[in-house]
Image 1 (cartoon, helix red, strand yellow):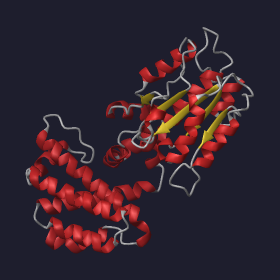
Image 2 (cartoon, one colour; image 1 turned 60 degrees about the vertical axis):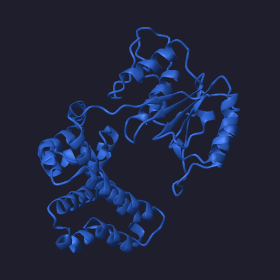
Image 3 (cartoon, one colour; image 1 turned 180 degrees about the horizontal axis):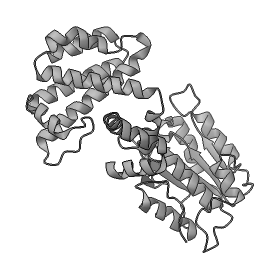
Image 4 (tube, rainbow, N blue to C red; image 1 turned 180 degrees about the vertical axis):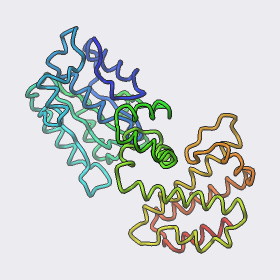
Length: 345
């Protein structure tokens, strides 16, 4: 039986694993799908849900999921009563215990259209300890028809007791050429953007970490402008240090940092871009085959790296991280930026 997970680029092995597990009824009650934002976790969770509920899953001549039957259509359109999405409240940074208590109450009811009831827990890495402990009570003895798919960007905060009951499956990001080919083939507007603005696309590609979903989000959102500005600031700062111009460029660069009290997160993002640039310079000095995450031109990056010792780059990296952590601890924005730049002179 052919699996119908073709939209999940760079994850053929993972898709085949799920297809076989569903075909041979060997699926676990819970999984952690681990991957950066935009790597296809939501899409894969929906396709797995559709495959479990597909009305044609016993037909050897049909694809799995078929994407045509009533159950598949409902799930892919987000209207199936048997696929329940659990997510944070819009203004909350964490996924709290009330959302998890809902699962405990709801899981007692049998599925409506399918043999399974699937709970897709979004941003599961933000679950509070209290929420995780509440979830564990359900996870320890789930009904036979219940499947839990936890979508995580990292697992550092996930309790070991949950990890032991939910296999961690990692989503991969495609190689650059593979990503570009996929985008050009499937999104005509993106193909036009790549052809017309190759340098801008390259910056967006690097800012996305190679994530297809993230690339699409950035190309089509107002966030693109801010990211390009952040990258411009990072490159200008690094070049200014490299050419011993930071003292004369101090005023200009300091004003490029966001100065508004309610834009603390923007400055943290700006500092993160600077960290990416520093990481590239260190990597290119230490590796024969560096993989760049900030700079788009390897030859230019190598030439720029000649202006720094590894020790100097590490010092810049440490100062940048110190400023980033200070801002996260609610330090004064203007004073933090001035002190940070002063350390780099």
